[in-house]
Length: 221
Image (cartoon, rainbow, N blue to C red; front, side, top):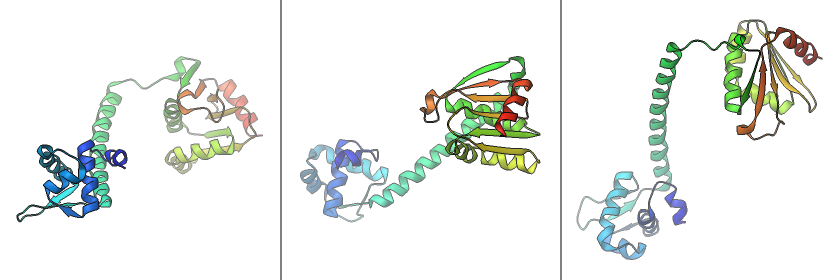
């Protein structure tokens, strides 16, 4: 149980004191020292830290007693704090990305015939970039599970394409080649099995209207 409590961001002594206080309901620092097997010289510092972290409340009158904040309330506080911190970090990252976007040239895949893309994260970044540029059609040819995953991941993009009148065609097929065709100008070939680990997924992006037309024609069958 102590190891589980420590996952809430507490050290060994803090977890022991909090666990004891949950069992006792309320207690003095001296009693908690004995119950939690925490040195008396340390228990006051531990309780002070737990109070600052939102795990305990102390009485205003003397003798001072401590009460444990319920685990559900502790969780709510931790979740709120972490969400606020994450939101702040994401805003900072968004600012960095926006700054870099304005200071860099747009990626031009037309300057190369083929690119190898490693990792699902990078593959999906490329897909989103290509979807934004589509004006005619998008074809997905893959297993049903793969199509569902892409529709969920790129739902906003597909909604925007539909609003622009861009055709989004999903061809569910038996195990075999998986690919996407963008505007019959480029094709993305998935080079690893469907259940490959995300980090080791690999795809080949080919900027060739000739090949894109071939895969588009075969993918619609």
